[in-house]
Length: 217
Ligand code: PRP
Image (cartoon, rainbow, N blue to C red; front, side, top):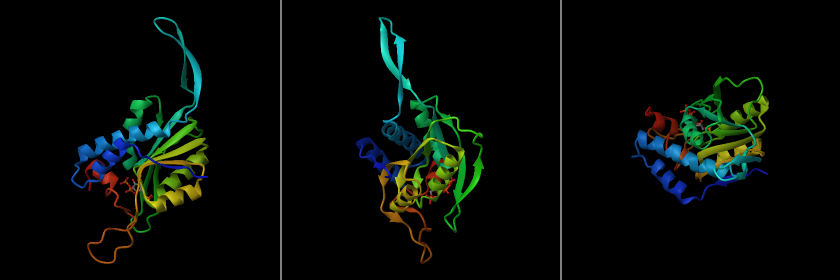
């Protein structure tokens, strides 16, 4: 069964609303992406495995824990890049492996342009990072790549999802947990007249997360 988690955390809801606002400028937008990702990662990592670890405190031996598995972060270029630093603040040991995909504007299908994964998997848990789950094509293609690589557990962390994208990803990969900050209403249809937005944008959404982060819109 696919597991889809849409956060109800008040801080996330507050910050996502600021992120959506068209007047939020790039610097603030980047800060919000980083902050929301930290909060999402806190929820998405709640079931990570632990190994026991004893440490010497100034007073005695304490029985504690350390993370058992190696964690890999896979940001989907470009927009996923802005989600890396927030998680690195929580898990500085996490490896980062980039996957480059862009969505063909006409077909809306993902086109892969960068992949430097090593031959064998070096991590046990992979967190895919991409703010937008629109048609779900990019996320599904990334999971395909990671499964062919031999990745064990895979989770997807996104900020805004459309129902179409959630369905596509969870139908294709029901074993991948999906963590979102918000689940929106629908995708824009094919434009009917001049001035209509392009097809495949999340509504109400936040526009183009890559352009808004990198100031290229
Ligand atoms: C956006 C977004 C996702 C993808 C989502 O990237 O960051 O990667 O589209 O769409 P999908 O669910 O329909 O595949 P975009 O292609 O705009 O590239 P960019 O991040 O380089 O701007």
